[in-house]
Amino acid sequence: MKKWLLIVGALVLTACSSGSDTKSYYQLPLGAQTGGQSTASQGHRLLWVEQVTIPDSLAGNGVVYQTSEVQYVIANNNLWASPLDQQLRNTLVANLSSQLPGWVVASQPLGSDQDTLNVNVTGFHGRYDGKVVISGEWLLNHQGQLIKRPFHLELKQQQDGYDEMVKVLAQGWAQESASIAQEISRLP
Image (cartoon, rainbow, N blue to C red; front, side, top):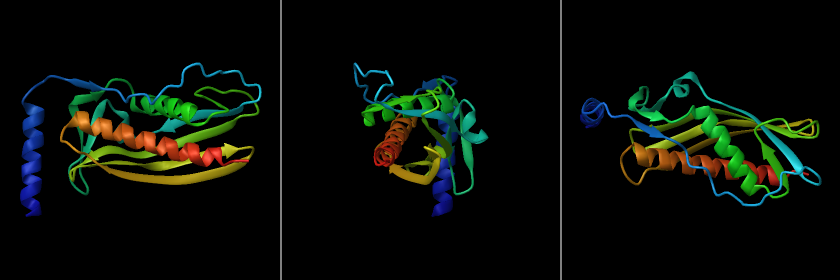
């Protein structure tokens, strides 16, 4: 039964990829923006999102899809509109900015009094069972104290297709951003 499902899945992927040379480009939507937020640092806590790193398998232009427990494909016609690591960093900064009142969150250094966040994303892809996977770990340097947390999310797609997969990936990334914000907001 599993072999049959894998064969059908491979045929569907082959049919979808060979039927057309039309390319689709995807951009992660930015989270809810809070208008009028000041960037003055007086009285604010500072957070520099230094980098979001991704493995080589995710660093190409193609959206990644896991076809079995051990096999991944990188789409030729379903591409990221800009580098994925930049999209992840930009959306993380936007999400944290809206979720951390009293903080100035930026993708550039803010001064010597800043906290620094680095995120290593190891999984950001769709999977053969209709779920998306978002995994990795983040490291926060808070006043010289290092806080490291792993994360692993699996979210179910409600519909088939790359559009839905990217939307659910974005929802999962927003969910992880909220989790990071919650941890940061509890800091002394």
